[in-house]
Length: 66
Image (tube, rainbow, N blue to C red; front, side, top):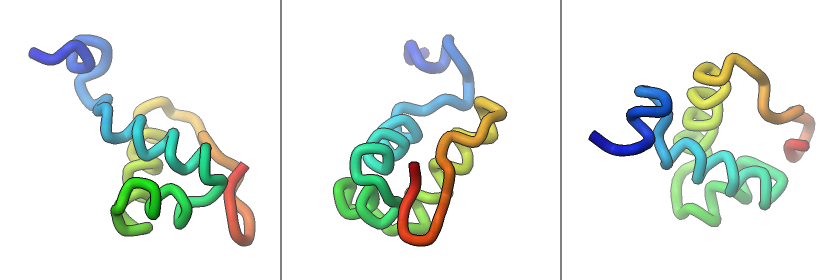
């Protein structure tokens, strides 16, 4: 069993990596470029993390997030 399984069974380090990449880049497209993943994959990971923590993590607007 991994350590992150103990904290929350659905919480995955990949979700946190996507969150951090988007936060640092200021946009999903920038975050996806940093991770070499598609925008849709990163967006879905952020949405899944938001569902797990039951909170909106970013304010989404036009061409970025804050």
